[in-house]
Length: 265
Ligand SMILES: [Zn+2]
Image 1 (cartoon, protein in one colour):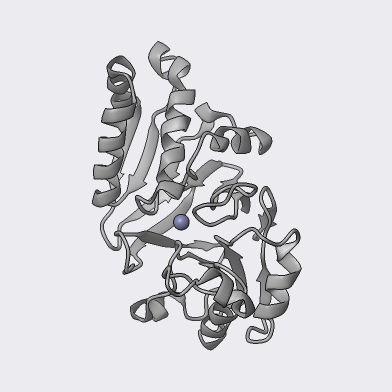
Image 2 (cartoon, protein in one colour; image 1 turned 180 degrees about the vertical axis):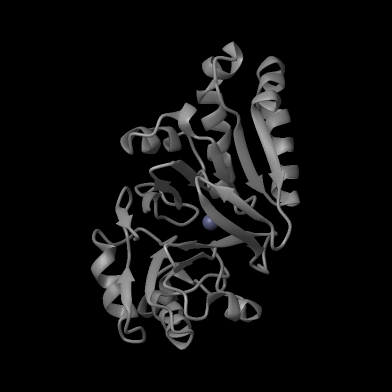
């Protein structure tokens, strides 16, 4: 399994793309969030992923930087969808609030004839806390991350006996500590460096810093920590974030840049 980071930025980035990624194995691809713009099409193309090969998509929550790219994906597939030449449907996994948002956005932004075909093509799977699905041969358990903002889901899965956890774009709620303890891989947001918190105000925006995340993940005995959803003021953020996180976290720290591939097992 590899993780292809299509974007690693926070909500309002312009040089980076908003955080979204693909879980890719020999069975296929699973897209996690879509970013906020038509740039998603370019990122998928760069990663050699054809839109019609996207059979499984998960949208974590309804914020613009995670959901709006979906409109452009489906609009970009209009040719395929209208002609009904596709072999397989697209499964979109999301919680009920995300579904409401998607339905609303679709109805206001897409032409009626395409809309009807899209509802034919897309299979919405509304997630509950603890819902489990086999996607490309991997068993994913989706859970409510108990976000302070809009209703948001993350997931965990086992990859060759290694536990992988994706925690969305809010700081870990202490209710979820046991979902994370001893995990092999944890994906957690880090909005900025702790030493730059007075510039970027992560806590006011309900986000974390590299240092604060590292501290929590160290206490939970996580082995590999992947940090994303960052601001974009540093040309090479990777080394800076890693260096800061290493003050608290002794395991492996990965701070990917856009389009970086993380090989998992
Ligand atoms: Zn976000």
